[in-house]
Length: 144
Image (cartoon, rainbow, N blue to C red; front, top):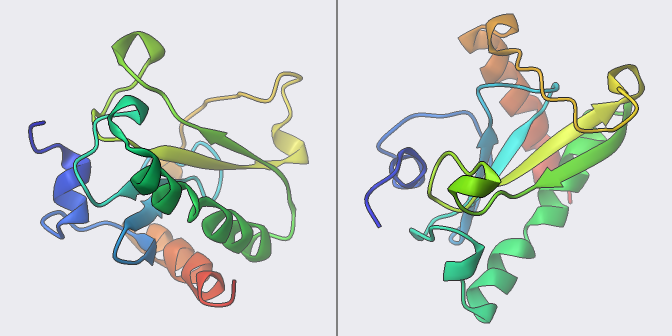
């Protein structure tokens, strides 16, 4: 697998707004911010998609999802739901070929009747806003 932007982020070569990190995964804010707090969780290893995991490593990566999900829930008391999305392969709309899971907080005001509203809001957040948002979420990853 070639070195993707996510692999370079995981190696610390590209700065990002980290909300959680350990020896297995990194979770950081998605620049698109579909909703406030939209976070990506990636394995640190260069895993292309779900088909490249072995059961043990998948368990290690996926066991971190509740920690980040619960931190989001605590960070945003007005959050009423959460989408966790994972696309695998080009035909499934995977755009970065490094496995990643979108954690998209949902709020009552976002309800479009189907639940997969995907409008991006990257222009609504300055670099400083993104850093403050990451700092806010990160404090809750230490508690859960």
